[in-house]
Amino acid sequence: MNLSDYFHIDPSSISGLAWSIKIGRGRGFKKPGESTGCFDSKDGYFVAGLHGKNFKVHNIIWMLANYVNDLPDGMIVDHVNGNRTDNRLENLRLISIAENRRNAKKLNTNTSGTTGVYLHKQKQYLYWVAVWYDHKTNKKHDKFFSVMKYGNDDAKTLAINYRNQAIVQMNHSGANYSERHGL
Image (cartoon, rainbow, N blue to C red; front, side):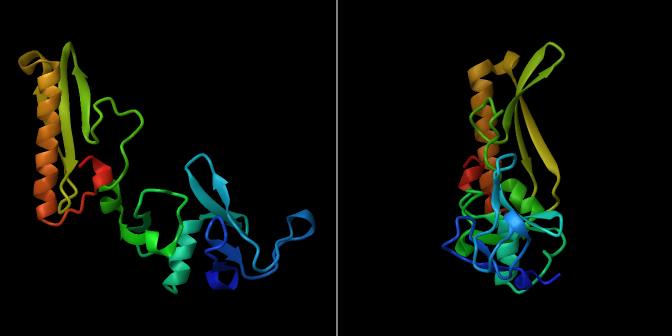
């Protein structure tokens, strides 16, 4: 399937994408030039349906701009500013899945206020844990700080500082952790 047969980039469209051809019948009829893509509140992206399948609009836009019909293996299209609805071409970049994971926003379940730092309970003991992934090996690393040994506030501060130092060192060697990721 050649995406350019069906879609074209349209910065005036709310999703950034429009139909290139007449599609559908009856009430579902879409004209060439009409905006396409609806907001999926489940994951926060615009999606466009074609031939019974849903496609993320930002992927289509990047592929159209780069004259390809598929993303390279192991790569995804990332929103540079973290806003999943901002599909301007200058806000889209192709990165590895591992790099995208490093630039994820802080989860809403985060209890420490810092990405990559969480409170861990092991039997009756509590630990603040710093976690990060090595960008070269994709290996997970962690460092535990005992609440019993340091106290809650100091253990949490130690974990935050340890993780930040690890991220700074990794960025010096090319990891590209972003400010969205707790720096």
